[in-house]
Image: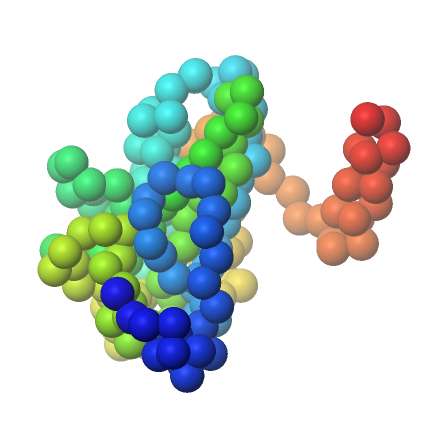
Length: 175
């Protein structure tokens, strides 16, 4: 684990949060998705939910011919023994929060500052490293959203930041 001085020198801020998955990194070049899903309408089982997130990411990665898979006993998405997506979730009253980080074109050296997900010896990878091509983050976001919609049988729609803020303001006024 890196010292606070080394983290500061690299411009890394550390945050403690309530979620499974141990230590991870979020930064530029990652698709970070925090699906908010009421599991009461699906299945009240966090292990099931984790497997569904993995399935959605595996389906999204297939669009770039990346042979992604699960690794028995470990959470996340892997390709050829390397970890390409990390998952850490939490739920309150069966409503999920936190989620996944899919490495698209991230600077993988940041993972050298930690033991990613608490798994000693893990080798992190990215879509860019696996394909040799720079893949637009927006295209990956669209593919991942569609795959999540398929896996959870939900309608996916795009909304602007202004629309989301208006919805949040309306929700807050109702409570």
